[in-house]
Image 1 (cartoon, rainbow, N blue to C red):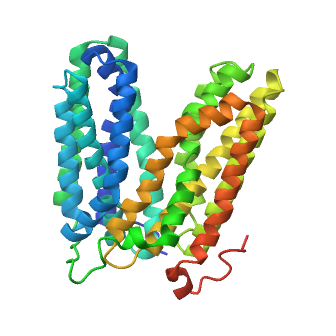
Image 2 (image 1 turned 45 degrees about the vertical axis):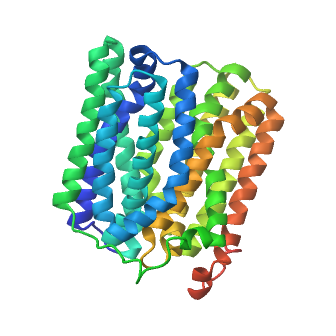
Length: 407
């Protein structure tokens, strides 16, 4: 395995840092801008985000086909520039209808750039470096988001409409800068003509791959578990101080920066990636089981258990990510990385859509039995990842040894 990245991949990493810095700013101020400056209600913002999520989910795989046909380089640049336009347009939103329209186009652009970026990584990096590239990009994303969130604190503290607008325009500039780095600093990865490449419906006809996408989407519930369910649980069901929410999120962020690349080792091949999916399910299940215990503990014991939850949860999160990257890259046939990366993203998008309702209804509202049920869901989903991978023709062709039973 190569010990360092190619210049093209390093520029892609730099572009990711620039882009996510702006994303971090928007993540912190977006809802505040829409409610305080535009004047939308919290419910309207939520409805708009749900509609945008559904649009992005539907568009994800078709836009991946666009990346395959145009070439991921050209498609990625185009979708980044479209995001710059939609972010700028957000500063001109004055009604709920306008917000929904802009959010919908933003979701299309975001889904398109996800598939194109995945295909671009596949085209630029050697096969045994793709997962490692994804891992370092996730670390870079956490760093960029962290810096952006910190900068957004200034805007939130001053709380002036002009500053919110300026922050949105600054985020739009980061999309343009990112597109510039890709356009002029990264080699072109050619597209595949429809006549010589796989059908645009190949990914959607690939039943074992779609089964994996669903399972991976279930495992991706961990995102809302950390951001929503655990904080609500701490506040409503335990006697832990509220500042523990920040402590757990900091543990998560630091662990990803320090350990994501290490946990990604061995997931470049299908066997290792499938095992990572199974282990991720077991770890996430264990985190839920420990959370169930905090329903009856108190004081320092609860705090200690919550720290254990944070550590076990983030290990499962990192393994889920690494395993998903490896499987999605390896199961895609030549000329279809874009649509397979788009279909792979559907699992995450679906998980993000249903997670708030599922986790708040089951885990938080039902108490410890709900957490145990959630643990079972994670454990079963993880256990089936190696099973569906083993049944894929690409796995059989590669003669993956022991994918379904190795530990």
